[in-house]
Image 1 (cartoon, one colour):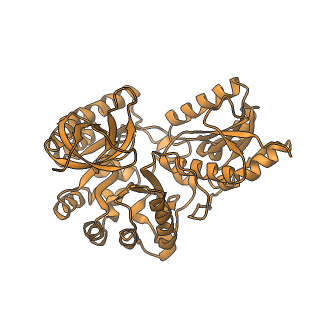
Image 2 (cartoon, rainbow, N blue to C red):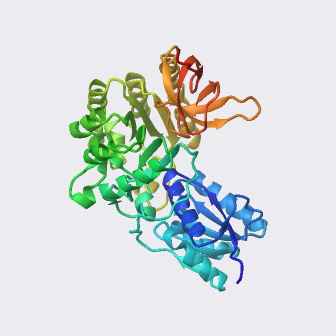
Image 3 (tube, rainbow, N blue to C red):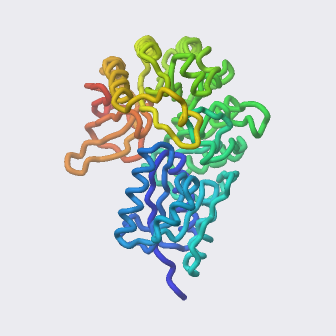
Length: 440
């Protein structure tokens, strides 16, 4: 019997990509392939690429070129494979296969065909696939946390965004399927589930004819997982029914990730998000009144074509007024194939970068004040890392989502993947510091 080749996966991009990576790993392991984290030892390297913006594509290309220079046989998967399959096959002779965003579940068959000598292009033009709880999965996150995809694709057509072209239209999983996977994750000892999709507040529209996020949260409330966190909650989808479900479901964290992108109605209209400009202020005030302890994170794009000083001033005042807990700011990236690519009045990169820095400067003292309010409290912290030299622990509180928010640095002893009470003794702009609280 011929030994099966060893395969490594290089993961780039967002947490949706991460889930695709985890399913490919699970399928390969189930099929008996050796999976190695060391790319040098692997016969094949699968690169799960990102193609969302120019910077992400550049990182993907750098990774591919480095592997090609090292003489590796490369399988290119993910958004860049979906976006540029032909060009990649032509430019990179080391690429033995390209696999689209709707085809990652075929990875075992792709490797088999490559082993037979075929150069494989497995890219469905309009992705329709979404994995469910029956698809093998090998998690790559720390043991206490897992991402759970509730839907894939997007029906919105924001002027700057290429995601619908790369991932297809929205397709939701059933509530029963999502709960079944949450139960599996709970059985593995997961303490925190993060619900993701392109627009989580639109969950279920395609399947049930109406949004069913409130019902999904209530169903997940019965699963034995201490923390359930939501990402990508569009403000217009935070209806009184959804807010009520957050309030009434103890393990659903009052943490709302609102991808607002801008505050000025004219820019939002140009972004093809006209509905949002009418509700931004109102919905944020409503959330704060209904859930006073809500932690609000948001992201903005500065430098969208036509953004004037007046528009930018409006955004700065908006950030100052609402005092978000966490803010991410991106400079506009013109993506070929999107309406915004050919809009007039594109701004110079240095203007965009100056505006990004200005917003972050406004946000920093706000973040510092919010973190200072935690000093003296005893809060639950999910322990995720240990510094082997100092023994100090690193984790997150309910206020912090992985990789995008701050960390809690903890002194004391605790098991990785456990939730422990921590007395916060200090704080800076981004992080908290404390020690394990010992019960008397």
